[in-house]
Length: 210
Length: 210
Image (cartoon, rainbow over all chains, first blue to last red; front, side, top):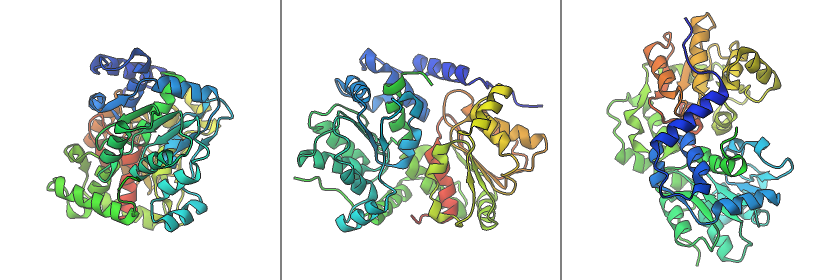
């Protein structure tokens, strides 16, 4: 006998979002950022992520404006790019990731750094007025902040949600302490990842629509 | 002044794995599956994931054998496929995902189910002796179990780590309760995701090597 389970995608989304809205504490977030909170929780299955989630003033508006102006989204890894729902974006908006390019590997060896950080350096001319999204590599977030400090034109929004045990906590602390006046979305602590980073972009692009 | 942080990828991996080994409780896992435990924790930043992680007897051996025999890896979503480190696999081993195909969308509408479940149905002839990997959709895991029950030749290993609020808990419980004698790796509860699912495959393919 086949298992009994909900198969309708719209109903799965509806019940998921309903459960999240019932369980999560939205009190510290502005109403305009609730969709981001819901989608981030949805991506990771953890309502207590709100304790670590920080959405700076103006982040939603800056992200919406960047998309409206068709400015690029620059991702640290291919999984983030893959997680961004293309059909929610303006059709010709560039979603860029340089981590797998051969030129990036060469630059990473030259600079003695990670490919993610090197890829961000190569794409630092592209994110101006757009959205920089980090879902994996703390080194990319640190390097983004250093590049802005050194005069690179900043993105309109930083989605900085790297994950892990070396540099993730520290790079997100650095973002919150001094984002160079760039609005940001982050999840402090070790938790994070490509799915959450992509979810933040999807929420800005499409709210809770699939 | 630039931020001071570790930039050497090998050293980042080394320190990450060292932290995980110091903090996580490996006592319930066979020694042969420790690499999977480490990589799963590494993917999500949470050492307490071990409380929910279940690696059935023979899972590692079945996965290794499937790769050695060049059998396909079938993924429920593109993010899982993207997260699998291609260079750790035999060069011509197929890594398949049908979720974005037009034929899948048609079948999903016909069957009134999700595209992930429909994609698994379309690829049910491919996973025989290979690895079925679910990092997102509970419906794909439920449908995989139903298809095996209905006579589809089973995969050698099921990596069943869907995430979320509707069906994730239940589909993983169903897998543990009756996997039709197929070895499995799962993380019970709501937590899961593409990064963890891909990490399990990467551990089987390459241990802790990058």
